[in-house]
Length: 235
Image (cartoon, rainbow, N blue to C red; front, side, top):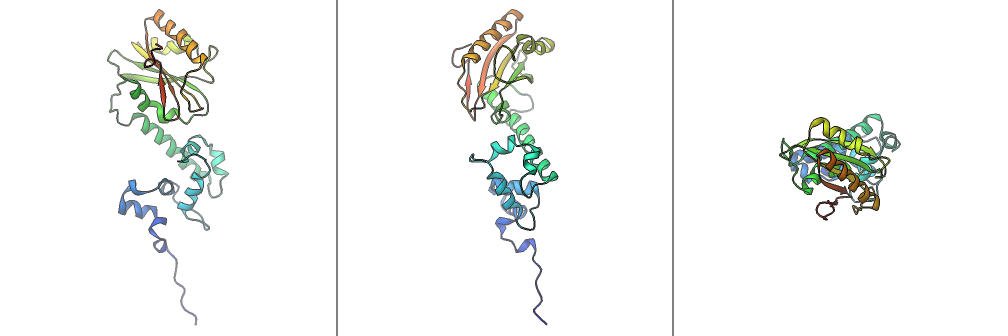
């Protein structure tokens, strides 16, 4: 009889290919992006480990982190990647949405206070920096600068046709806010204001003055950067 063939198990893999065990032994902060993603997608295939599959997913994007790709990829695009089916694609999209929601409130406590452009950055940066289309958002505040809510008003290039004072101020009047902040993103990553940005802001500030609702700032979100109209002296 020949020698008995030993069964291959997960424990035979090096620690680098066992993200669950590595996290337990060393802590989550010691895992790479691919290893963390591998834990979310759980399994690989008969041809590759979950870590190898996660590395291949992250390499789909040309950015340093691969997260731009994951924020914007559709479920259908995810499923087109070899080794990614319905369950794994849903797990990845759920992870990215949860990451955005956590990032939007991290470090700001249970009651969000907006007193500076940096506070706005903490609130919306991770949600808006990866968007492929311009989204115009309004942040509504009470007299103590506490956040009442922030809502999306429109999607598309910032101009008179998509951002009208009626839509912008209707919710502000309804909730009785005392001040508001406009926020929109530039998909190019460059937060410098365009001529349309300047003209639209001036028109909306005038509308707020008529209604007695103070426009505190307009912030343009880039890729990890922002521009504040108030800091530039434009409001």
